[in-house]
Length: 193
Image (cartoon, rainbow, N blue to C red; front, side, top):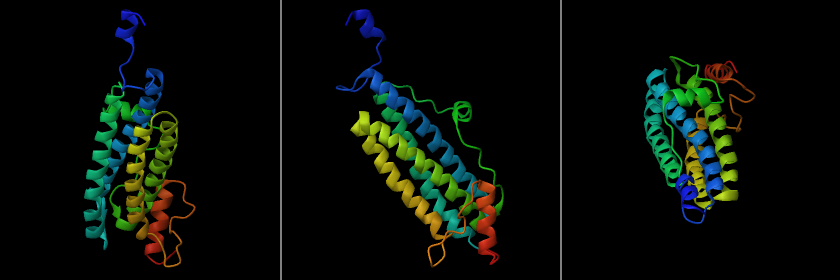
C-alpha cells in the first residue's frame, strides 16, 4: 500500500478490513439515530403521561432514558473506534429515520404504554438485524448490540406488564400504528376492550 493510499484509507481497529468496518459503522449509525430518538420519545412520554398510573410510569421511564442514552454513547464511541464519524444531530436523525414521529401527546399512562410497546418492537427488531450484520463482520460490535438488546427487551417487558392480561393477551395485539395501539390500550384499561 502506498503512503498516499494509507493516508486516505479509513483507520479502524486492528484485524478488521476497513471496508467491512465501514459497513458496520453504517449499521451503527442507524442504531445511533434509533437510540437517540428512543431516548427523546421516552422523555416525551415521561413529561406527558397522566392518569391513575402516572407515578409508576413516570418513575419507570427515567432509568430507561438514562440507559438508552448510555447505549447511544457506547454506540457512537464504537463507531469512532471503527474509524467512523458518529452523527448525532437532530437534522440528520430526522432526515435518515425510517419510522414516523411519536404522535401521542398528553395521554393516559396505559395509552402511552400501548404506543411505546410498538416503538420498542421496532427498535428491537432493527437491533436484531444490526446484530446479525455485525456478527458476520465484527463480534465485538455484535456483543455490544447483544447487551443493548437484553436491556431493550427488559424495558419492553416492563411496558408490556401494564398491557398484558392474566392469560397473556396484550391489549395492543394487532395494532399497527402508535395511535391504534394507544387507543386499544386505553379502551382495554377502561374495561371496553
